[in-house]
Image (cartoon, rainbow, N blue to C red; front, side, top):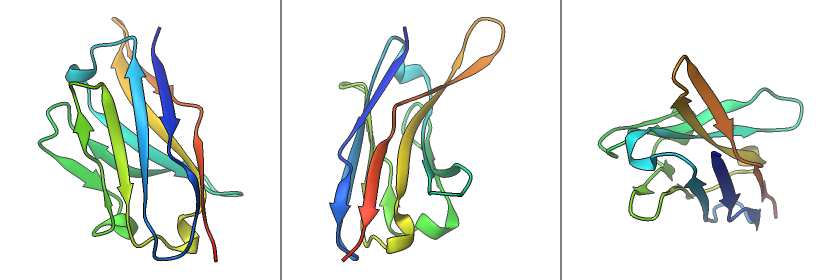
Length: 120
């Protein structure tokens, strides 16, 4: 079955960096785009960044442009979220997402989430 396992979260000071990882299994990773979302307390889940199956295009929400990148390693079935110049407002649980064709419709799969806390 589809599994997405995030890692790399933690506590970081403002201005610092973190790299999140999402290890994928149970589907043909190279065939699908991948995304990162985040959810802060009391707020809706929001898109952080997305990357196509080939890695040839990315999409980042405006507040993350210039600070976050979303590389992928198809040989390792892993997508990353490199976060630089972190701000307290980046504090949230970060989720990896894959939207996979199930034969009759698209289905969203989510990891368990990893907590990122930006604080001094």
